[in-house]
Length: 222
Ligand code: E4P
Image (cartoon, rainbow, N blue to C red):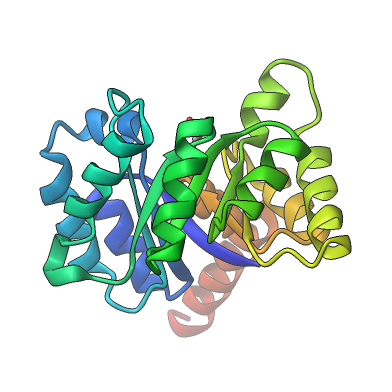
């Protein structure tokens, strides 16, 4: 399973890229709004900060409701950073979003259909040519449904139906989500930087480091 980072914060993106684990970046209107920056400029900055990743998702704005409006935005977004092929158009899971997805897929543009909460939505997005489909497991858990189970079912369905779209487990809240979607066979999980930090930690690692430091100090300051 590959890692994408789910943020529009440039410093977090740069830190995760330096670790060498990053295969992509996802943003959404809420994440961009939190940064208080101009959307297209931030997408360009992200593309420049992570030259070797496969995908940087840029979502059409919430006021684009028709396929034509989404396509018009996508046509501007794909010019970002000199027509950077990493730029992936993130589209909502609506009929208009699917129509735009099919149009863009046929033009060879990468797409990510977002806000997926059912297996059928994932199936539609895959058949509309989505490069990526993004089931939101955390938001399902928030309403007492099983988000990881949804990801497992989509993995199984795509295997049975030979569907090529990659599954991005999104709305990840904690390290156990990461473990479980990896075990379920998700291609990618997109995680906040705080979760990447959590993934790297264990109390016994910290204790071990403290003990090594104390023993080293004792041995070298006799
Ligand atoms: C994915 O692409 C979304 O940006 C994201 O994972 C949403 O997560 P949230 O439920 O934490 O807002």
